[in-house]
Length: 137
Image (cartoon, rainbow, N blue to C red):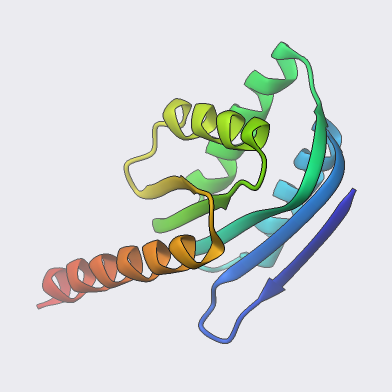
């Protein structure tokens, strides 16, 4: 699996991937995300599918994947996950994931462009910061 993850200055995590993806690949990526964010209360991440990929998972693994994503993001008090899907298959799979995950503290959305995803993450962060500021006042 081609996976490149970077932590930007503002705390945004950008993960890029391509190639053949298996359930174990995704599980390991989620584990790595948990390690990267240990001790943090919030997570803001953009996951970008850089090229055509083949996802090789069964229906059972798909359900486990949704559960693992929910579990990983449940550790955070607040956050957002933007998925940039460059293929129709990844877009559809990501939309299914978006609809399946029930976590009101973590916003999830799927995009066709990195620019739109970054704008959305920025807007969500702004809303979260406003709420946090009002809550503390």
